[in-house]
Length: 297
Ligand code: NAD
Image (cartoon, rainbow, N blue to C red; front, side, top):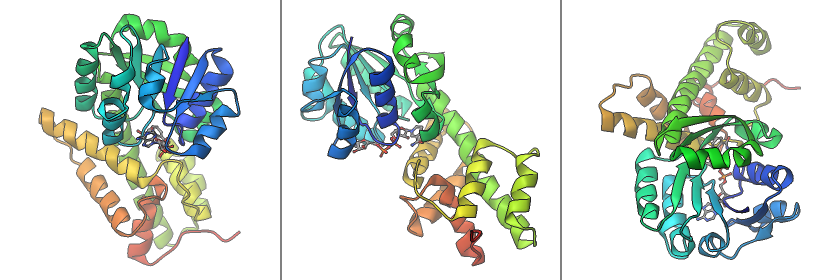
């Protein structure tokens, strides 16, 4: 098959490179960032001229883009996928996206004879690099079955979630849990250190106790180093919490913790940390308490 991959940033980049290395398919890439494209063409991909041009050439088009508005533009905008895509081909969005937008795009493309899947991912850049990212997929089951080998070329734990949009519902639910956990981790660490416990001692206790989680470990690690270089930015985490609140509004489901965490992210953005890693939610507590947790090495 020929695969088109649009958006080869922190997540799309390693996923695309694993497809190139592991799947045996020809891959054509597009991104606004030329250096990101080069990191894929070095491994054998070719560079496409536009989403439209790529869609006209391939069997499967994939996108991994930051915000729903970026996906909408790349699919429905000028020189977008919808202008070029051929009947019978498949479009698969790997972004953490709005299920409402996913269903709108799927309905639009269906009229052109195109099947869409939503297949967001979880595990971060480290797991994406290793080809071990979790993949949750919504949409037509036969199309899912056909693409499983492609999914397995860049991920593990591929789960079929049902109707189109359900991959994103699963992903948004997961991230709601992860970010509430992240905020609780920052709060607990600040409380313990303010009460006089050494950060590394507290870290050792919690990582072997019931407060342990993937997000706890990430907050503690970055608090110790004071390095907030993003592998997943506050900007994107804020978008994900917004998507959870939007879905809950639509369904009338009460969310008690999520609005608080969303507001903490607003505070982080207001303090100028929007492009820092999502764990920089810790910095809201550091700034409030005028206490930096970083351990000088
Ligand atoms: P990123 O900003 O690192 O990469 C996005 C890429 O898209 C960039 O290279 C950018 O140049 C490109 N891009 C933006 N608009 C474009 C356009 N109009 N046309 C072509 N290219 C365009 O973001 P990321 O961290 O890779 O996230 C991508 C998606 O994956 C997001 O939806 C995010 O929520 C999701 N996600 C990220 C992580 C993570 O740990 N970073 C984990 C799981 C899911």
